[in-house]
Image 1: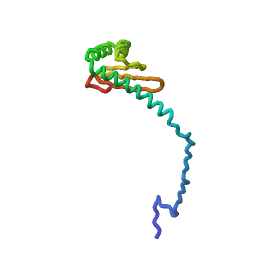
Image 2: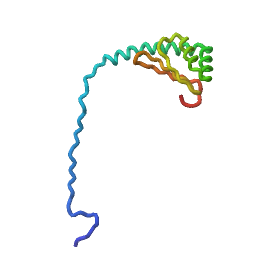
Image 3: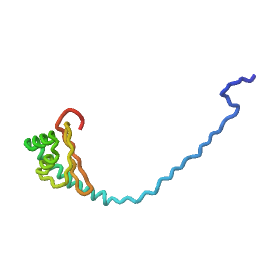
Image 4: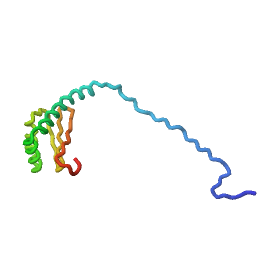
Length: 123
């Protein structure tokens, strides 16, 4: 006796998927010299960042003046006050009610500090 099933096929379908071969582009040989040079120059920036952070953490007057100038959106004064710490690298600052972002840069290397002055919000 033959039963009819609407989704039944009396033969097996053979599904054959060809294996996919992915070609990766040829990569150039690795030369760590530029990477090593960048790391060495970054150590100079880290020393500058250390000078800056030590001055900010040990001088309540300087910190208060920077916060007051930032609160009034006086970016040039904030930069002048940060330069007074003895930092010689290029500085770029951004601030908001939660804290300050200080970017120290020299040639192609950058070190960014995120310092809080408020416990609320995200920096």
